[in-house]
Amino acid sequence: MHGPPLVFALEATRPLGERVAAALGGTLAPHEERRFEDGEHKSRPLTNVRERDAYVLQSLHGLGGQGVDGKLLRLLFFIAALRTNGATRITAVVPYLGYSRKDRRTQPNDPVTTRYVAQLFEAVGTDRILTLEVHNVAAYQNAFRCAAEHLDAHHLFTAPVAAAVGESAVVVLSPDVGGVKRADGFRRALEAKLLRSVGAGFMEKRRSGGVVSGEHLVGDVQGRTVVIVDDLIAGGTTVRRAAEACARAGATRIIVAAAHGVFSAQAADTLNAAPLDSLFVTDSVPADLPPAALSSRLTVIGCAPALADAIRRLHLGEPLPGDIGG
Image (cartoon, rainbow, N blue to C red):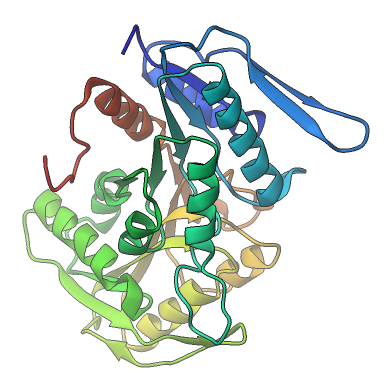
């Protein structure tokens, strides 16, 4: 590629984009976003992108005035403008990839939105997508025909969680069976950091018609610190349910680490009522909670250094951390 990478961040993700650019030792490439009176919009780069390696940051969450659909459409249009104006390679950097939870059919006539979103990215000429702690890595990678890069979030949480755990006996728990692999990756990273054995467990969970059920807890948490690991928190019901089960089973402390704090309107009340000692999330999504919510229990971990490192590696043709080929 000619010269350093061009890093753009659309307005809804600009604060995070500025932190990523600073971690890369530079500033964001200039661009324009304009909204017309009838609600339509346009965006364009304000620098020459021909034969350049371009990275566009946009987190696809529902917070703010645009909503997830508006953010997705703006990102797609901007990528298309880069392609039209001759960018050599375009990478969509999407720390939180919206619509990734519906990655398979669980009921008749269900949509598979992960695949549909992938087709939209491909249609506008995206060469590669990079995301952080997607809901289902295998489904994400299989949905895209362009390169689909993935960053695990457990490297961001290992040090702060290890400090919070101290010398206590620890169990890492997934709040559902589908997240066992994610939790085990964090468990192994925590073991390496603590230099001692860390237990494992998971919760039974069933969801039907928006109602979550299943109360069976697998794993010995009696007298131990439990670290509940998930990809995201929306309403907080899943985390609260797992935390309450651990408390009933005799856990002495309960810590939660979730990559994306996609907090809905009721999340603050739900999480405040849960028996949590600490909650860790990244800034992939702005932590939009009332100032008093969770008070000192909530810690936001910056993901900009990890995203910047991934952009640097991709630009140089180096493998990402955890790549099978690396």
